[in-house]
Amino acid sequence: MKNYKVKGMTCEHCAKAVEQELEFVAGTQGVDVDVERGIVRVTGHGFTDEGVTAAIEEAGYEVVVED
Image (cartoon, rainbow, N blue to C red; front, top):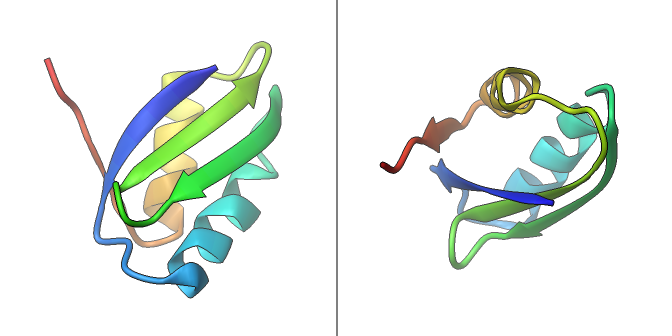
């Protein structure tokens, strides 16, 4: 399981768009989107940060990298 901070999500439509894109990422088994907190939680095995980030960006949102 890994959490990703996502910028720009404001509604359930946003959440659905992100969920749909992440369904196509190899290794993802579950996605939970918390619009209020701007967090996407991805579960599964073998998915990559690059794959998840690309899918979220394809949905039209920005992944915020926090150090």
